[in-house]
Length: 289
Image (cartoon, rainbow, N blue to C red):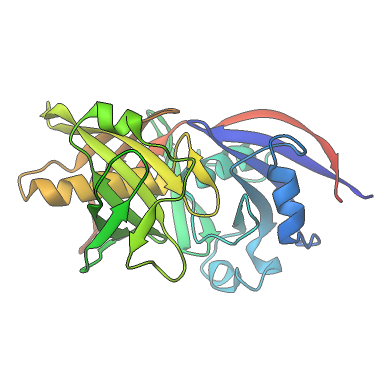
């Protein structure tokens, strides 16, 4: 069986198997990805980050044309393709800088994703990615999850990939959730969605910064210690519920740590930016079945 190189990395516990493939020579099947991400029989991870030049991928055509040399080919742990991963793109950039393939020292680094090109810069928390504009979905979704009794209303937020955010009244209910079971949504999104459960801090805002706590069930993965785009979606949802006086700067506590969210205007559009750490754990080689 052929050997491939890999690096293990994570962003606040949301972990990935990073596979360098600059010329796009590898064709990884869903089953191969699922084995690599298996925590008992493989390396273990919430997904795969394939590091490939945008020009080497059909999905990267637009990214290459816009000047983004590198494309983050992100796959969930079950092998399915995902549009974007907020923690993953920071880990992806950390890898690029560690191996000397790119730098963020001279300004924003453009990274191609299936949700468009994302700009990554340094921040006080580590690295910050501009996720771009977002959209609040107009239709309410009912969410049933084990441990919270009756179905709860959820707000759909699209930040390049789909999310449904559910507000819970207290930390006890958040901790009592059983996210080993897939939450049931009505209506059921045809392509699935990520589901976030949030509890506001008390007070919600301190010194002009909002604060919430969150758990997440990621599409194609299950519960993870963190979800970057989910963190952004959760902050946007709580800000939406809180009304026009709500702040544009938030901190979000997840089981794996703390992330920052900002909502500045870029030109005429309000963007959402996610910041947090990115850690590389170890590197090695593995047989590709």
